[in-house]
Length: 322
Image (tube, rainbow, N blue to C red):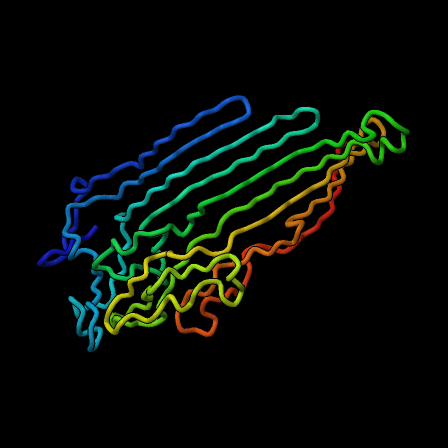
């Protein structure tokens, strides 16, 4: 790892670095068919004895007028791509689960999670994303990209009792012994950032956020595919300044999905078993929309133009065992 002080960059030795393991706190209450868990995870960063004010600039110029390269601290080099373990994150969650084991042909599991994840960067080890202001990394602290506040998942298995052990032989063979399975998933959306869409600071970096003049969140009744959030709540920052909007300040559409399947085993003789399967994914054909366009100035700003899940998918199958 390099440390840049007043002189030339120096290499930090392994003995100069301090490593910390993530700390996890978990408390739970559990009984026969009910479980309550509260958990908190606090990953600590990799800490090195370096001057952060000079280390993280990555040779970026300060905002201002004039030629970008001429304003770099080291004009011999362009932008220096730096990847380091210096961010922090934490996650708090409450998990509630209720389970009924197989009783009279019925088995179900229902779980609910209420959580919040905050970090400084989800993944900046790419060539297209990075910090807005390398001189002030605290501005990146916000909702994590994968922050899902609420999630409800329910799964069930039901063995239908009709004609299972009684009735005419033909009815038992065709209508008896059916099994219904299902999974329901309902969850809130993931956050997204509002970008200015241009290099307002004149630093050669387009990953700059807009100014936020009011909340920007619309009520459920006001949202639409062409106006998911209040586009008037965000404006261009003043010239040569960073926007005051935080990272991941708005929440996108949630997900509602129901999968179902029907199984039936047919016995052919004493040695052959054929399982018939009918599976329906997203059986209600509920659309799960992607996050809206969050780049200021475009014609589709604030609009949703795609989905993040497949439409209804039906499939049949046969499985022979002998």
